[in-house]
Amino acid sequence: MDPKDMHPATLAAQAGGVIDAQSGGVVPPIQPSTTFARDRDYAPLNPANTYARDHNDAVRQAEAVLAGLEGGNGALLFPTGMAAIAALFRTVPNGGRVVVQSGIYWGTTRWIRDFCERRAVKLCEVDASDSKALESACAAAPTQIVWIETPSNPWLKITDIAAAAQAAHASGALLVVDSTAATAILSQPLSLGADIVMHSATKAINGHSDVLGGVLVTREDTETWQAIAEDRATAGAVMGPFEAWLLLRGMRTLPLRVRQMCANATEIAAFLEDHLRVETVLYPGLAGHAGHETAKRQMQGGYGFLMSFVVRGGRDAALAAAGRLNLFHRATSLGGVESLVEHRATIEPNSGIPEGLLRISVGIEDAGDLIADLAQALGQ
Ligand SMILES: Cc1ncc(COP(=O)(O)O)c(C=O)c1O
Image 1 (tube, protein in one colour):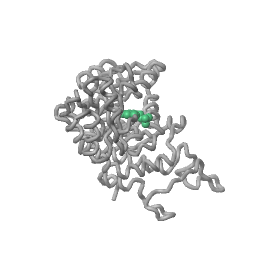
Image 2 (cartoon, rainbow, N blue to C red; image 1 turned 90 degrees about the horizontal axis):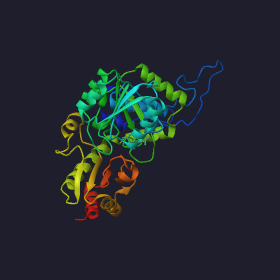
Image 3 (cartoon, protein in one colour; image 1 turned 180 degrees about the vertical axis):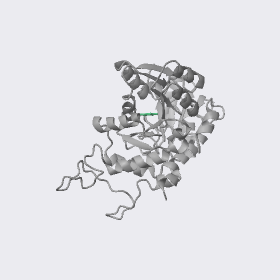
Image 4 (spheres, rainbow, N blue to C red; image 1 turned 135 degrees about the vertical axis):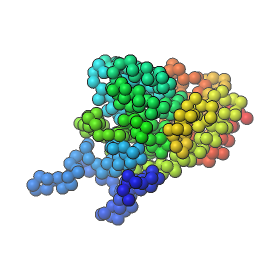
């Protein structure tokens, strides 16, 4: 069967999965060699491989799966999500202009602000979940990149991807979507008009909190895409074969994990919404969430595993509740099989995050156990 005709569950379950001709193994081997031999006429023994900064089978196999899951023309893996973001923004000429969603992953905002200042790139930050505001920001001047993150971390705002694509294209820009919190299972931004989709593969794609990685997937093979590929090959921000192999293994259960995490998150959101010690729950699966209708249109099979809630009583109450949790690990990151809790204001002080906000990443544990843990931590 042509991989193009496979459903995501099949693509993922057999990630990297041609039978290994040499061993007969049903999982791909890891080739750690950094260099590849040539014959006596100086032709490479395998024309696909000369040096591992450009060429590794496991990396290519993982990229093929990711491109397939996103419905893209090609994928490029990077050693971290931030390295993928940096490679993309390096295509913006000095003095150019970018429009970036406000209130997104703090590490992205911080790096882009610094990059734009150093390179004299005009930076317009806008609440992209407001389609009209995004349209005006894009229309203000010719732009190279429009960057959105949906659902956003940690505000869980939902941006209308199709509307954002129209606004970006009218300004001559590429629309790039950080889809880390949705995964390719819940959302396919390229089919809605986005040009490039980005993930921190460190999160749900790997899913086991043991690999750093980032990926860009493109809808079309463009000049900008070639520039990014060239930048990766020459600047050398590549993923190693062991990490790529672990990603392949992680992706085999991606649809299953995402399904269970979404089901757990839905139950937890309903529990928190009814809890007297909780002021607000930010989860796009809730009917009262400002982005619920848009999320319903552009996400399938669930609303993700990321959620924030504001504990009544502010910073002290939130930190005390986090401190009483037994099952949720107090740790940064998201998308792993184990549930995590984070007090965001500790990590990004003075960024406007409510002091009482706890962000949780819901794992695949039993939902009842997780709810019991939250209940005892918040107080009945
Ligand atoms: C939404 C989002 N994008 C990008 C990143 C950066 O990815 P990495 O930590 O793999 O560099 C993160 C990390 O937390 C994230 O949450």
